[in-house]
Length: 42
Image 1 (spheres, rainbow, N blue to C red):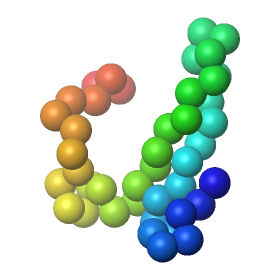
Image 2 (cartoon, rainbow, N blue to C red; image 1 turned 90 degrees about the vertical axis):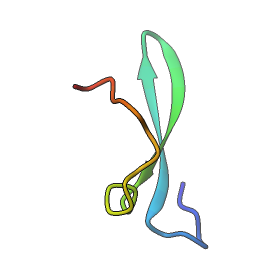
Image 3 (cartoon, rainbow, N blue to C red; image 1 turned 120 degrees about the vertical axis):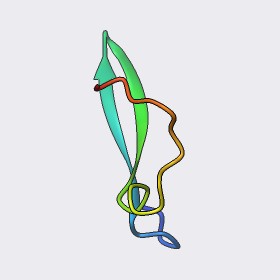
């Protein structure tokens, strides 16, 4: 799913431990510093 007004953001469905979760992917978030304090992938 793509946001037409913001084409640099899209949503991806992933399955984690049997649950469907929607993840927002923003290709510009790193350029502007992002909004997350920490990542689960560190």
